[in-house]
Amino acid sequence: MRAADAVTYFRVALVIVVVYLVIARVNPILITLLIAFVMVLDAADGYAAVWEGSNGKVSLLQYIKASAGDSRYANKIKEIKLKLAKTAKYGPRIDVAGDRVVEYALWIVYTYVAVIPLFVLLVIVIRHSFVDAFMASKGTSSKMKTRFAKAVYSSALGRGGINVVKFAAFSYLAFVYIWGYPAVIGYALVAVLVAYILLRGAAEVYEALQE
Image 1 (cartoon, rainbow, N blue to C red):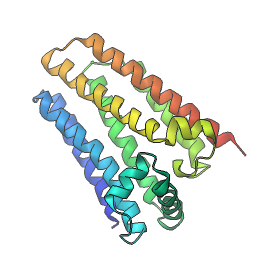
Image 2: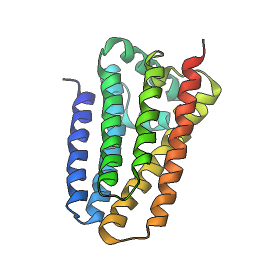
Image 3: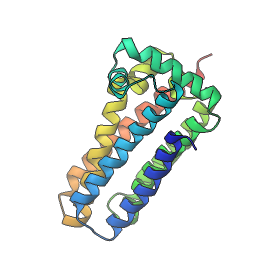
Image 4: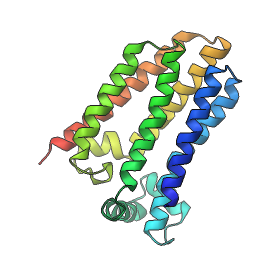
């Protein structure tokens, strides 16, 4: 088994633990730490794939610099990811599946405990279902070429921004449900997150429609 896939499976298992802890009303600080760890693992599986694909020639520091937009390493990392998309038959798709499971699990648990309304979950499911279908026709996000898609979706700011908003929203909702923090802040974070997700979805569809 590829190390990257093993990391993906582990973070999926870990998010199920997070779901249980939310329902059981365990200390939201612990839940926040676990959500942070799950998100770090998302980056870790990306590095694991690149490290294996380069036969250990890409260091963690180089990967971090590439993710931050350093052109000295970004192009090299991109080439490795494109190669992996061809040689690792299931790897890139397993990574996407892991991302979806983690995100769906968190949306579902907060819908289940009535912290967020059902229609928000429906918007997310519909968005991901159709956008994933469009992107499947183009391969992976590593192949994005249009300026709009690169800026909104695959740039360091685009990727980093969505992760920060996800972490803030999903963590804060645990405090809303367990410790009774003001729900209005949670709603605002969810609104920003949904808007961000829809914008990134528009970038993916735009990319997929290009010839």
